[in-house]
Image (cartoon, rainbow, N blue to C red; front, side):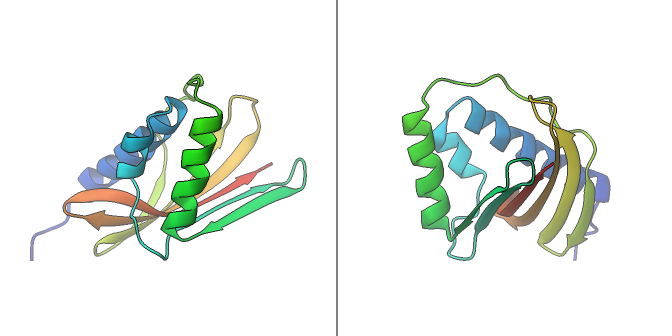
Length: 133
């Protein structure tokens, strides 16, 4: 079995996270979905503590529909947020648990968690949880 280079894996995960965000903000739907695992167990949740709203999207078809419809209804690109540079990573064979804090464009603090899986040598998102404070 090949030796895992933690820093290389972390850099590749960081690249996937930032690239997926850029694709979404640039409204590049096809590129956006290439960064996601496309299986029934995929999840995407948002909890916004500042306005007491939340969404939970379960399964690739629903995650895909949610983002595709959003991009269709909001086709103009948005300014890109600052790239993520500091993440905590726990590697588990071909999976990883990632979390980090970031301030969004509105200066709200967000805690984000990603469940990552390596498919065909590329890290992809299998789960996303965002808490907005």
